[in-house]
Length: 491
Image (cartoon, rainbow, N blue to C red; front, side, top):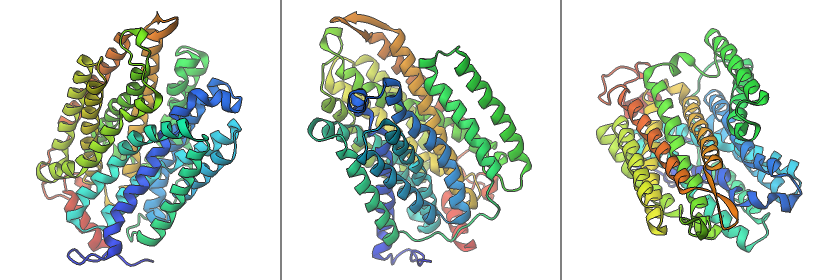
C-alpha cells in the first residue's frame, strides 16, 4: 500500500499534487457528461440512426451514472477507494475508445454508458480527500472537487462545439480517451490508497433493487415527454419503479450490510441535504440547457440572437471560470460560518441569478452575466453539499453517502431536462417559417428554476444548526475537521 500523506507542515511533492490530480479527474468525468450535446443534432446524419436513438447518447450516461455512483461509492468504502477510482477511470477510457473507433449507434451508446458509469469518480475523490488530507485542508479541497461537476459541464460544451466546427467528430472521443488514460497514470503515481474501510459484505440484492428502481424512474422521467406522460409505457415504468423502490427499501432495512443505509439517510441532516442537492441540481441544469439554445434561436423570433454553436457554448465558459475561482471562497464561508450557511447563501444567489435572467434576455452580455451569477451560486452550493454530508454520516460510509448525494443532483438534472423539454415543446409560435419556443417559455423556465433554488433554501433552513455540539458523527453535528481527525486516529 502506498504510504499515507505526511503530517501537516511537511507535505511531500506527491501530497501537494493529490488534490489537483483528483480535481482533474473529476473535471474530465464531468466534461464527458456534456460532450455529445453539440453533436446530437448531427448524429442521425453521421450514423444513420433515428433522432430517438441519438437521444440515448445522453440518456444512457444519466442512467449508468445514477446507478453506479452510489454503488461504486459503497464498494470503495468496503474495498478501497483508490482501487475503485482506478477502475472507474479505466471504464471511462474504454468507453471513450469505443466511441472513437465506431460510427455505429449501438457501439456509441455502449461507449457512452461506460463513460457515464465513471461519474463515481467525484464522490470517491471527495472521500479520499477526507481520509488522507490534514483537517485544515479538507474543506477547500472538497469544495474544489465537488465543483468539478459544474466546471466540467461549463467547459465541455464550448470545447465540444469547437471540435465539431473544426475537426472530425471522433476527435473529441480520442481526446477524452487520452485524458482518461492520463488520469489513470496520475492516480497510480500520486494518489495513495485510503486506509479507512467499512466492514461488511457486498449487498448484491440491494444493488439490483436500487438499479431497478433508478432505471425505471429515470427512464420514465427522461422519456415521458416523447412517450406521453399518460401513456401505458410511462405509467407502467413509474408504477414498476415505485414497487421496486418499496421492495428495495424494505430489504435494505432488514439486511445487516445494506447498499444504502436508509436509517442514516432518513436523518434530517442527511435527508434534507439530499433534498437540497436534488433542487440545486435542477436549478443548475436549467442554466446549462437553456442558455445555448436561447442564444442560437434565429433573430426572426424577436428575442433570439442567431449565435453559432461555438458562441452559444462560450456563453457558459465565464460561469465555469467563476466556479473555479469561487470554490476556495465557498470553503472559507463553510469554515467560518458553517456549510449550512454557505448552502443557504448559494440558493439565494442562484435565485437572484434567474431573476437577472428574467429581465435581461435580449442582450448577449447580460445573458452571460445572468448565467454566470447562477453558476457562481452553484459553485458555492456544490462545495457546501459534501461538507454537510460528511458531518452527518459515519466515517466508513463517506463515499457511499457522497455517491447518494451526487445521485440526487443527477435526479434533479433529469427532472429539469423533462420540465424544460415540456415547456419548450408546448409554448411555441411560428417565426421565419419554423416553429420555435416563445420568449415566455424561456422566462417560465427561469421562474421555475428560481423556485427550485428557493425550495432548496427552505430545505437548508430546516437543517440542524452549524454550531457543533460535540457529539460524534452519528449524531450528525460533529464538525468536518473533527471527524477527519477521528478517522485518521482510528485508521
